[in-house]
Length: 298
Image 1 (tube, rainbow, N blue to C red):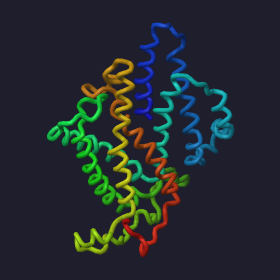
Image 2: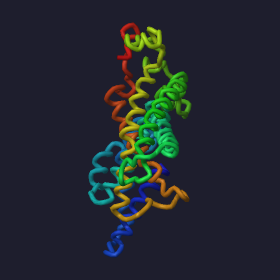
Image 3: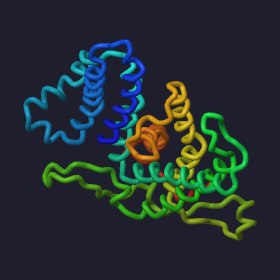
Image 4: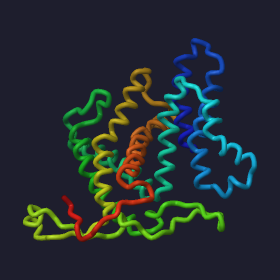
């Protein structure tokens, strides 16, 4: 939430500097008002779903939850602020949703984006020769390709390490009896070791017929592919946005690195993809059921 608020402030400050000469009244006040409105809209239902026992104890909270969508509607308008809210608050909300599906859906996506940045930098530093895109002159094809393969390896190994522990794979739930969050469950088939049959061409090369993997490791390869090939374009979009306003960074919160938004542009895009991926292929807590006897890598 703190990161979300800081990112919002940095983007709104850009708009304020641009439109300051017009002497628009209540510009900042309206911006923060809309931030509160959108957070209420997104997190209201989430709090009711996961903290229902607490909500029922307060009459005022019951009213806010019961008429949640109506209240959200009457306080909602559209402006520059809402584009910022769409970028920041919506995707921050998806990060929280991913977290409640299990820590692994939060840790792995964040880690592979960081890994991609590091690997792309290293490969670009030592082997970079060919510019990738004009919006980011320091990006090279060598770094882009090297970052891709490095991220695949990083995501695959991290998925293997985390899939072994219930704490990381179980959905986060609030226990009203103990007033604590719990992450205990019978691990889904996605997090149970399965035996896969290798393709014949691979069998001839490695002399192996089968390999034991967690299904989540296969999902991690797909997540890593997105983080490596599509994720960086979140940064390219941010670069284009800043260039349009003739600024170098969103802010100077982190000396030498710009603002918080400069560090989280790709993370937000990755969080959105992860949320859609879970909804499409994992179906939230109803994880895919795998049949070990019929599974194959291809």
